[in-house]
Length: 111
Image 1 (cartoon, one colour):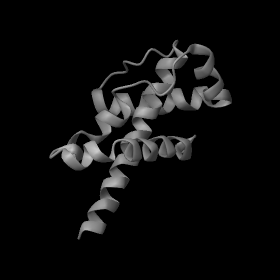
Image 2 (cartoon, rainbow, N blue to C red):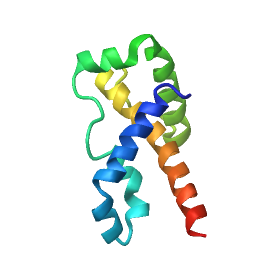
Image 3 (cartoon, helix red, strand yellow):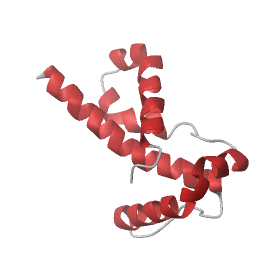
Image 4 (cartoon, helix red, strand yellow):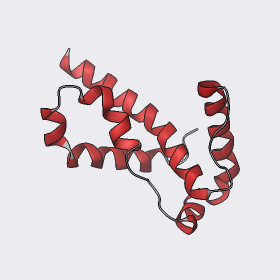
């Protein structure tokens, strides 16, 4: 699913730019990159903003999360009654893909 993937990638690119100094100093930054970029802070705060962000894709996003969590954890934990929780979990999932691709590209450049 690619819903708002470009927006999320821009968020990640901004994170990289803003934290460049820390990342260059940290020995294990690659191992923790996804956690720091997508799990230390909320992408969206507030129910209204989350509903606006989801728009008419809410049920598609929920299904994407459900499939991911069922596969990864064997159960679903996200509170689908909370638009804020839905957005932030979706961004976390898409963030995994973005970080993985970023690290692959970085590895190619370093080779």
